[in-house]
Length: 374
Image (tube, rainbow, N blue to C red; front, side):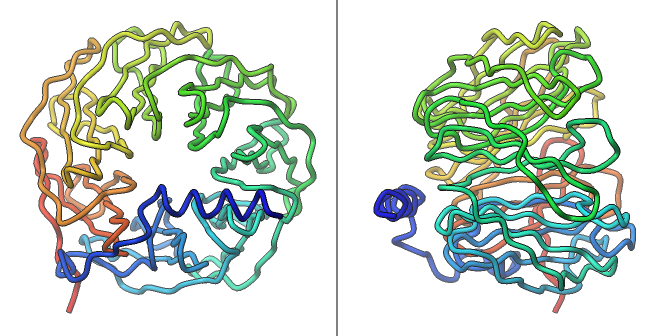
């Protein structure tokens, strides 16, 4: 117990929970709970518009923001979870065709599952209390049985735990895999192009990305660590080099840079290039933000309070465009067409403003905040 309390105190201090700034930028932001730390997107109420779910790490809740398809929010409702929710993700956990939610609660050592009624309401709750300090989760069909499974990275254990889903919302642990020290962010991709889901985990303590290649039966090969820059955070995975192999762009906060790792199509990664960002970068998003048919990158910089926009040329090179100034520190980004104009926009989660903002993309690499209704 002392170990968990010690970790939670260190985590909150490291995330900057001491000085919440008041008032800045609230005209273009939506309340998201105290110290929001993670976001996931989906059409939760089946109306054809993107919605957001945001985990508020200092308030023990997940806030669901239902989008109106015009860059605004129709409703805002919060759901109680365990102490210290630092991650939220979505997936159809019970097989009813509706997106459900999973939050990982580091302070409580638990995960909270909420089941969707199809109208964007989450009434049924279920808790999993078998962790030390879970920090990230991925929902996916790891064993190809048509039912969603769950993987959870635990930062105190330095392991990824795998759970098989029964298609009705219940999960049983079937394995765990060591990864780099103090895992932080986890995402999924098919790195070796075998049609199976693989997992990638950034670790703050070892400054690595751990790659776990899926076997297709719910198990994974032993992880392989790839050394990157200091304090790797979020990753964007896509073919940035034009060779039809998935590559990885990872934000390294200790280097104030993005590292581009070229994939070999077999699960291997090698450093190809490094691109400067702002001060203390954390989140990253990829899409064709400039409308030229090539993938670009946007990086959120917490200490310089801005976005770095990197225009890709399809060969692994990026040109830095004009930075986008922000009212405060962006801790996480998500991209999608929130305004219905066919151009990728950004959802920006501000840690110290306790808010989420929608920024309209102009299709040329620029972004402007949308004002909420009313």
